[in-house]
Structures are given as C-alpha cells and as structure tokens.
Image 1: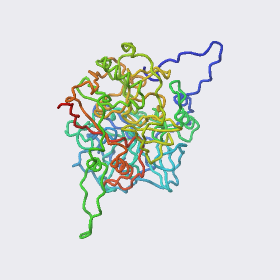
Image 2 (image 1 turned 90 degrees about the vertical axis):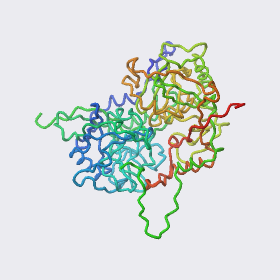
Image 3 (image 1 turned 45 degrees about the horizontal axis):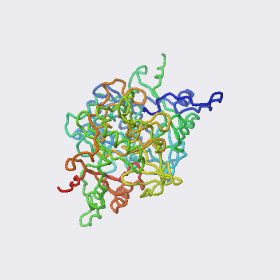
Image 4 (image 1 turned 120 degrees about the vertical axis):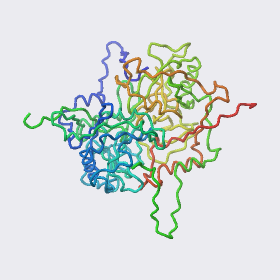
Length: 298
Length: 298
C-alpha cells in the first residue's frame, strides 16, 4: 500500500532470463563521477540558523542578480538578518522572512536596486530541457538553476525552493533585506517580475512545514507567531574547516543527461507508463552535501 | 517590502485621467453570477476530521475512477478511516494517510480494483486550456478537475491538492483504503500510473504544514509521530442542515474564461510583465464555501 517501497515479487517463469534491469535516477546519481559534481562557492552559500537550531542552506545566484546578491552578502555581514523572523507562510505559494517593516537596513544597503528581473541570454551557459515549457520557447538549466529564455533574454524560473527578493509595487523597491522562497506549484507568473537570487539546497522542509499564516497573503497575524531566525552567515566567513559544503550535478555532465532522461521516462518497478517528459521545475540539478574543501596548509 | 499589499502611490500628472482599471482575478470571482457556480454533490464530499479537530474537505471524482470512488464511499461508511492516521509527509511530494499496513479492509472492500488510471476521452466534457502543456497535447478542466488528453484517452493530472490511491508495485493493488494528496510541484510523472480520485477543497493547509517524515519516502519513523484522523464522513450521510457545502466556478462559464485569462495575464498593480500563459496546475477552477442546500421541507 506504500507506493514504491515494496520488494519486487518474482513472477518470471522458471528458466527465463530476467529482463535487464534499467538504472533508476538514484542509480545514476550514485555512480556519477566526482568531476561531474560542482562545488558550491562558499561566497554564494548563505546559511540560515533558525531559532530552534535547524539550518537552511541557500545558494546565491550572482549570474542572475549581481547587484542584489552583492547587497545580500553585505546585509549578511552587517548581521541584518540576525534576530529577524519568518513572517509569512502562504500555502502553495511562498515562505517569506526578514526584519519587521519599520527597520531600515544600515549604511546605504536599503537603497533600491536596479530591477534585475532578467538578463542577456548571451554569456549564460544553458543546457536546454528537451521538453515543452508552458511559459517560454526555451528552458533549461544554468549551473544549478532553472532558466527560461526568449528573444535574447534569460531569467531564473520560480520553481519550488527558488529564492526571491520581496518588494513593493514599484519595480525597484527591493534591496534583498526581505526574501521569500517558493513552497508550492511553481508560480511562474512571477517570473521577470521579481529579482530571483538563489535556490534552497538543504533544510527547506524546516520552512515548508511551518504553520500557514492566517492574515492576508499568509502573513502571521501576531508577533509571537513569527518564527525566529537566530543568525545568517555566509560560508565564506566561516573557518574553512567548519564550513558546510554542497555540490550539484553539472547539467553539462553525461550523468545529468542520463538522470534527466530517466526522470522523464521512469522505469522503476512502480511505473507502468513513463511520462515521456518532465517539467522544468521537477528536474532541478541534484544537490548533495560534500566534504568541505581543505583549507590551504591543512 | 511585502509584495502586493501596499497602497498604490498616485504618480499621475495633474489633470490626466487615470487609465481604466482592469479587473483582477479576485474581482472576477467576486462578481461571477450565482449560476456560474456549481454545488459539490454531498455524495462526493469527503470530510476528514483530524485529531485536533481541524477539518479537510475532499471532492471525490467518480467520473475518473468510478470503482475506486464507490469503494472509498463504502470504506467511509464502514468507518474504515476513523482512528486512522497520516503516516507519511514527503516534502515537495505527498501527504499520505490510512490504516497501518497490517489492517485489512472489512467485507470485500480490500479487493484490488481495476487500474482506473485513464478513461475514454469521449463523454468527458473538457474546457481546454489555451496554453502549452508539457505532458500532453491537450489539457484543461472537467468539472473542478485538471485533465490531460491524448489519443482518445483522458486522465486527471497530479496537481497540488489532487488526491490519489496508494498502491503497491502491481498496478491493481490499490483499493482506496490508503490515500495521498500532492503537496509540491505537480509530480505529473505519476499521471496514468495511479488512480486519482479527488481534489482537496478546504483545510489542506492543515495537512501541508505537518512535519515531514524522516524515514524513507517521508514515512514517520515512530508510531507517535503519525498524525491522528478522528473520523471521516461523507456529507451525504449528515443531516442536510448540518452539511458543509462547497461550490466551484464552472469552467464552461464566462467568468471562468475571464478569470483564466487574467491569471495568465496579470495586470494587478504589482505586475510589470504578464506571463501570457498559466500552468494547468496553477489555475484549477476556484472553489468556495457555499450555503448548504436546504433539505426538502425546510
């Protein structure tokens, strides 16, 4: 009754050779070569420590929103996010966090930034997804991120776990001091309307399982419902030996191509009819924890 | 910094007439005619009372899986689900509930049912979605359900909140005694591999916000982590005056067509660039609570 967890019952007739067993997507990941995995740059690894000690790891995406990512790094270093909170959880939409609205970022970090909602497609490596996308003529992956492209422009897609910058009604009112992550069916209608700055790599279930807010747009109605964030750190600012480390399967790799094909054409014992396709948001480049890089002199 | 909740700042030059304000999707719902809303049949309305008193309402879909829905109605009436539990919450995938694996449904209700994974397209009304679907040449809505079609066959799509029947590895091992609902990016690769039997209409956030299970496939590892289900009832079995009632916006209605177009082409003040499309799973026919129908003689 549990799907896909049961042992296979052998129903083959005696003497017949069993059909060759095709690999599963998990088999491909287990056998991918070390060089096919790309380490996350510690300067892009944002670590959120929640009030209960749980950790959420986010990879920042300077190729998509360089000014926003630079500002977020600077905000982290001023300790802007320490003592902040998750203030909004709207079911099938977003989790949002930051300081309360009356707080202003220090120095000039509260300045509105340029509206980095898309960028030139030229110069952005793309491994195209060989299936139809509903929203753009071309879609695929660049690094660990989902991307759509049209008419010479490229943008990150609002998939589950993708992180964006909260803003007001004017396009250039975000600064990265308030962030959100997608927790439901991809709200792709937000694509090119908001600066997307990263992807949650680990611990996201600690955010997605929070109680939904009962106020308008899923905001918590009472201050005590807000879920505390103790501290936010960049991995680059930690001692090299103490840094958590992650790596993603490079979309250019042979293993990614195999994995993607098997995700679209499932042969696991549970499946009867392969879909023949996969949605952009359901095949983000796989991520795993890695051994931290050794510091020089170790 | 909260997105879309801020007042519009008037930047119009003095004397210029403001541009005509286009309606939002919410405006369309607020002004739809009563006849455009279709009441949910109480025989199809499955009400789950959780251990903490929260309620989840599910609309069953006999047009898609008649044998499974008939079995689920019979299981409900034998009180099969009373005292059962949510046993699995896998992030970005499914919530699953039922009795423990060693319990067997009473009478002949544990018999495997035919694999109702798709059906003849003929005879199923469909309002087509005018945008590309990644998985099928044709997609749209039938009643309140998302549907895909290909080569004369039709099936319900695995969207957020759609309910299916847990099964083992053989296709015909499900009976409806164990159910799941989708809680993440639509796992459309499951389409046509499982019997889909309904859609959550209300209270889903009480399931989606549960802690994720830490065992394989998101099963809870300890019995005490399982989230209790107190009672499951069909609305048809309640006194007419006490029944909760829901209605959906008929996809054939003029208001649905307007709503769908506006979902795909957002003009709300927050939006800068409309997407020009919407995903099948992001525009399910809207549902709302309704006044219960008066019983005869009331």
